[in-house]
Image 1 (tube, one colour):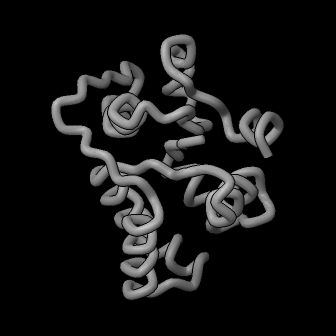
Image 2 (cartoon, helix red, strand yellow):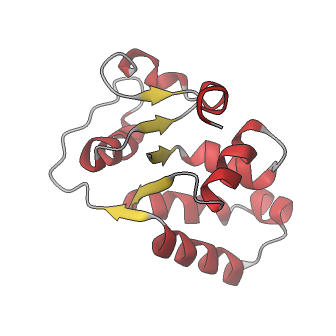
Length: 136
């Protein structure tokens, strides 16, 4: 199974390992599914990990963030989203995430973001809790 994880799910999973998102991140680390990312997603993850509040919560410095992004590049499938048409009407900033799903033809996009609600009938989009109930 190939999965695209919303940044919020990934970051919540890193900060709260006992939470539902934490179970999803742990399942990826155990190779229960393949993670799919794109360069814009990796850039967003790196940017958010560098927020002072997040760095403090995780206890990571810039070097650890860089290593984590490198690990993701190595362990995840990085897809190109160039030329992919994706439109999240509720929040165009989420277009790269949807484009990653479309370009990769992944099985699921896991997100708790309500901006994707109107697209769930058109694309394989699932909430973190539902994913855990069904697959973990």
